[in-house]
Length: 298
Length: 169
Image (cartoon, rainbow over all chains, first blue to last red; front, top):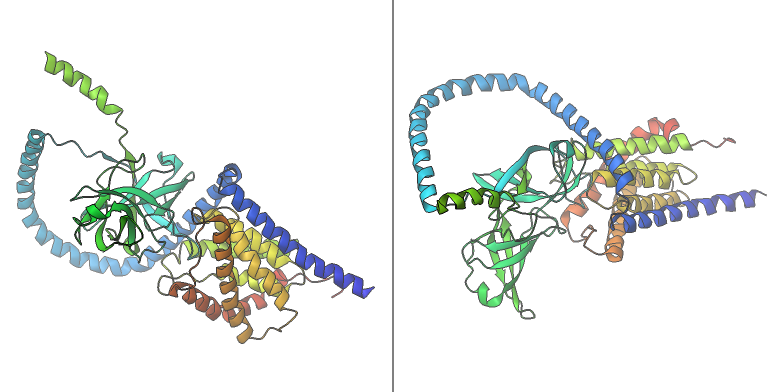
């Protein structure tokens, strides 16, 4: 009798994990085909809210602890900045004059307005729980009008660079797939030679981005340090967003195209804020050009 | 049994949320230790049935919703080490330091192998996996091994919550 009980226990120990492993595999196969969206969305809304709560609590505690020291620093900074402000007032007047002059020159040269429109500015509130996948969670979601596959950029060192795209949207948060993720692909071109290729990541922010499908003939014109920007040819990313600079050019013997390694234009370890962009789909432009055309006819 | 599964899933999920928020920049060289995995390993080792595997599965589902991974990915990754930990209890007996360190380290390595298996099964389009040649993977395994004695000690103090007692006991 005791032997029977033991064998029953051992079989349950083996069978339940096997059933669970099979269930995991089933879930992966279903979810990769994006069938199980609805229950996933409900749970992700709850978890997204919880992440937001934890991030807020953490932020509050951190701010409270550091606020006293910050007050003393702020007083010193205030005095220094008050001095600087006097100088900047003069510079501001000069700057306003230069801006108006620049606008006039731009009109004369027929420069198009930047196609990039910022849909929402957001803060990174969480990252991926493990070290396998690389994603960011931002504090804006459906309620801010964000949608799946919207481009995400960041400003760093005075430059607007492509940070990634929105992978999943929840009510008040979204998951961003960064440029360096190996599942990320973007149509790109070299800023100087205008040669086009496809850029994707290698899964690690410290590793170079890889640009492929550049012919070896074109590769001879490429120089180390050349800037690579988005081409704008796909339906997601606006044109001319900085992706990275050429770090290394590889010419494999087995292929007719070169492999170009890029140094990302953004330092992902220092990212705090992200800007969600909405690509100008060009629908507004024709409506605006009709009156212009009529005016010209007159 | 249900109480044990609920409590361990809740604690693992809590650790997962802490890992994504307070520890988002990593603890050492940008690497986040997997406290949730340690909880699952301890529960799997200390329970006589499949509580560890079930809570690993449920915590994995929570992890999938927090991550950009496909649903079911982390469930698989957590069930595999939990299953092995539940078998290990028949072979080795727990001590205060060495077994927790080995369990934390080996559990992470098993998680790594499970991720590679999934990559082979489903391809790189949707699945990412640990690279065994990447130093970050071994740092995570070491961190998990290092934190295991401390966490196992704390879990041992709240044993009533996380271990199902048999009626005969």
